[in-house]
Amino acid sequence: MQAVLDSLGSAVGAAEAHGCLCGALCAREGYTTPEWIADLFDAGTIGRIDDRSHRVLQEFHQATLEALQSQGFGFTPLIPDGEVTLDERVGALAAWSGGFLYGIGAGGADHRIAELDEVGEVLQDFSEIARARLDPLETPESGEVAFTELFEYLRAGAQLAFEELAALRASQSRPDIVVH
Image (cartoon, rainbow, N blue to C red; front, side, top):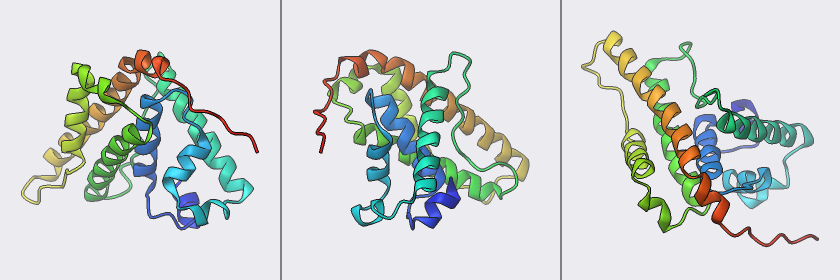
């Protein structure tokens, strides 16, 4: 995913792009791959997306939706694994959280989302995680433990938001589709 984003000149990293997609999928039924692409790239880039890159983005979109819909808690935020530094992984957690919040807005979430206590709490926590930074005074072991806890919270929080917002998504009017 990162290679595709880099090849298209995106200023958005893979973690943030995935967070954006997840938030939008939570907020609106039928959030499409072209809409996600439009949220990730400026209009000049969209015309340069080759077939292979478009296919990768489309398959990634579909896999993410299926993971959120899975009953087996198969959803996992796209965060680099232990092969990169803890600082980079914490940065990716923050970017994913910020992307998720952006996606909630891009997906068209309305005021009713604030009425859902658990989801509101998750979104508030995500806004705090979006500002996460590695504490230089923390030991590597305690940093890893904190990272793992935050990662699991993102995973469970996104799944909870998707499930709790199902009725809201279903009640939204669908945007008019224009065929050219």
